[in-house]
Length: 285
Length: 225
Image 1 (cartoon, chains in turn orange, purple):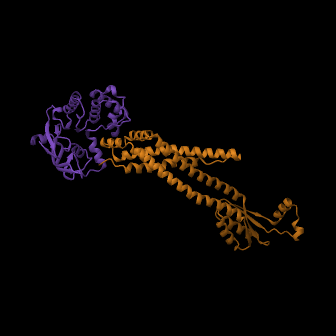
Image 2 (image 1 turned 30 degrees about the horizontal axis):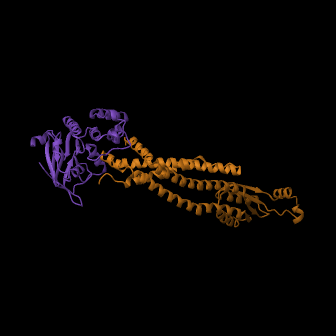
Image 3 (image 1 turned 90 degrees about the horizontal axis):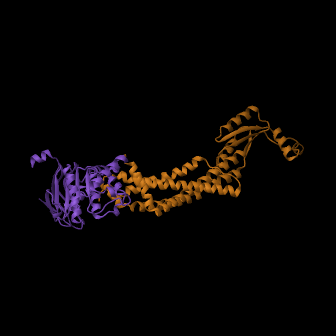
């Protein structure tokens, strides 16, 4: 592998011998990566939004009026064991009535002839689906001392459905487009590689092994992947900037997201280069 | 012959090697033994099978029958790695012009050393020395397409000799050259032989090969002394 520099140089050289094909392959792959990045970015942002919303949504476990402190603590302990629970805290009927009266201005004591609020354990979650919540709520209703579980099922359900739709139909569409683009990129790279077939034949006659040929094709493909990855990252950045201009709100994606797009371009292209290099056998006629 | 064989091991040893193309033509039961440091000339008309023999010796084609070895590598069963190993021990001068067209003359000569993974400094120094030897030093920065026919032939010789190969195989190195250029190329090949390189030259013009050599004739795919 001492000759890796020479093979890398030949891969670099191949990139420039038919610049039109390089440009075509680079732009196609950049588009495919950008599409995936946009989809992944949307899902990430949606997940953030979902987490924020869910953190502000509360699930109330309503307890019997005559619940004992021991029972209350036991139910709270059971609730804390649920997956995704961020916080469980007790709201007494008196404090609920106080807050309600302060906010609404009605005296419910007069209206109902007593405090209508039950003792409540308020549970906050981070990242849990509404389906899971349904099953937890059904279980909690059977606990001793619990009279019901109240949670904003519809909002929860809508957020989950939206994320599912983006992952599902949009995801499959993007994956299909990505695969078609990848196929066209492969064809463009192969045409570019084969344009130097006489030189590859000469190099194999001079003693270059099949691994050398593969390495040249891999370097060639990886370079296209790196440039495309950078273009795709630029495209995502432009998209976020346009969003900022339009809605005056800054969206931020994690650094690893950009790294995945950039390295993803290279990672996708190396096996393709390997396939191209393997498909061409000049070693023997 | 026996005493010579003992002191000089065979670089090429073909026994009953045949190869036929589907459309006809090829080689029939070739027996060829070339000893170390020998100078052998094979003469034959166009279509006699000279290029086919070069392809067999360089592992591009595999014998369909018979067996043989070149520089210690058995022909026919060798895998990719040993084929590369075989070719790294050969210096090949092709009948057609085969160059890295987008590289300089210097880079073309240095290509075998680059494949071997030699440091760039060593590649350049040795390639330049070789270019000086074949009289192409002034053309080092030019492209092969900018060279004349004679210069291209000298470039091929320089590239073939840069590794100091065990066996130099030249397939019609004088074709398309005027007599002065042909004479220059013959001198370069002879000089390599005088330095101890085993040489096999294929030619269809016996008169372009005026030096002392073991001469063989290839006709209709059959080789005879």
